Image: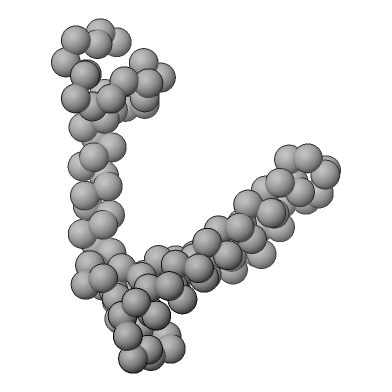
Length: 115
């Protein structure tokens, strides 16, 4: 499945609002809530010696994806563009792969940083 396919299918399942502001608020608060559920599972794993429930994480990450997809769609942005631009930004930030030194330097200041 492509991002475009997912975004189309996800959009068909969202609530309709009369005002874009209401849709954006609903989707943003929903996204924050779902990210909080992911964080809660990881907190319990890290600090309460609980198992990290893989099947539950897939469900919660799916909910995060649904809200993100619909938020982007409401803003008129397709997820493929988001993904492409994010990868380009990351490649510019870490041209040779991950580097702690690059991670600590703003992109505008990277020219003088040696790895």
